[in-house]
Image 1 (tube, helix red, strand yellow):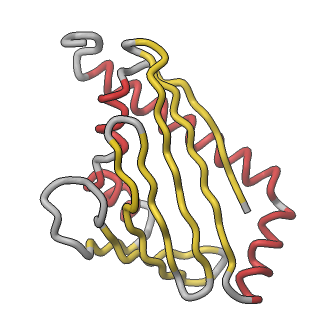
Image 2 (cartoon, one colour):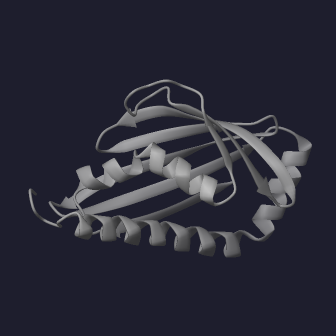
Length: 160
């Protein structure tokens, strides 16, 4: 099952990539939403090999997965791979500079079931795909707006 969306962000590509690769902030955000996040590597800077163990509730059950940064090409792209006993997947983010102060972010998520139970979960998600896509687009749009706000608060076009 695949989800994808694109958002244009009123901020330079370097700023947007910096926000996307601020993994400490992303960890805190996941924890505020009820996830348990444990960092599994000791890298001092963002890059390939960063990994986390994550636990969260989904559809009434506690889920566990491992996430790892498998590609990291500042300021253009990043891929994170996820693994769990029942499902795998990846999330790919690509950034394209439309101008000095405007960036297009493309985000794709792919889920791959590994057993019958996961296939049934994916099937139930497919039945609700229209609603899920709407919520996915909305959340990515809200994230893009937050990045724009942070850019404006940081001084906007100064230094660009």
